[in-house]
Figure 1 (tube, rainbow, N blue to C red):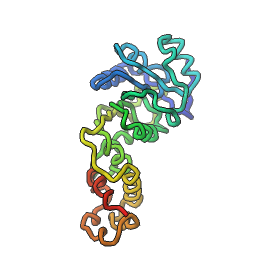
Figure 2 (tube, one colour; figure 1 turned 90 degrees about the horizontal axis):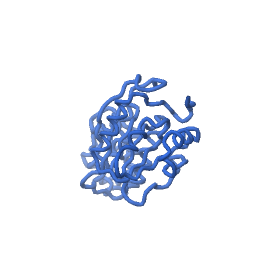
Figure 3 (tube, one colour; figure 1 turned 60 degrees about the vertical axis):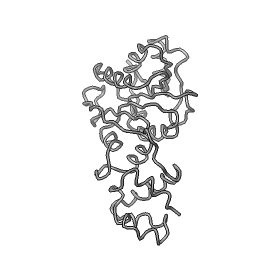
Figure 4 (spheres, rainbow, N blue to C red; figure 1 turned 180 degrees about the vertical axis):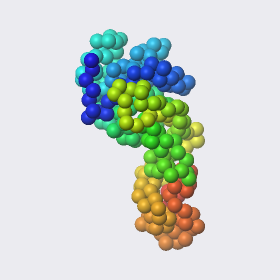
Length: 250
């Protein structure tokens, strides 16, 4: 029996059908190099190893799980990176895909890590807490549309694939889960730069009940703030509108 480490947000995926659906979704995209984040007990790994002609690497911080994986799947020898995903370097020099049953306590941080690697990511398919998945996939006008929605969708298309019940895990989490897939946008949004977008979006949503004029007034000159666009609230602006607005910042 493997030890469940709550500090790492571990919930073992036991439903084989769910694992197979995730891997099938993954294979719908280009797949030459693949990083699995948090393989744990190998629920996905055993199916990933069956995919022909891919360069597979796994990153796992839990040494007990690493030992188990190497013993159970000897072909993983030399393919496991024993590190914290949030502190690791890119595993490949060339473009690669990412998959994982992501620990819910750091899933948003993992997404932002992937944004750091955005120029190398071909796709990212993974399990998230349902609310996080909905937030990542939501569009303007939604109550859950926010910082992560905009910053992720500025660079990736987000597809909400399917939901997963608590009974698929051991132990069952207290929340439902969902699988989403991220793929690079075909035509990048024009923006001043990534840093400007981060500052603008975080400032705008920090006071989401206020109009943009009141929320982001420190970032624009008085003349620019006269634009009717600033009568809107942050949740009403599309990703494209936020990107365009960065060019008008101080």
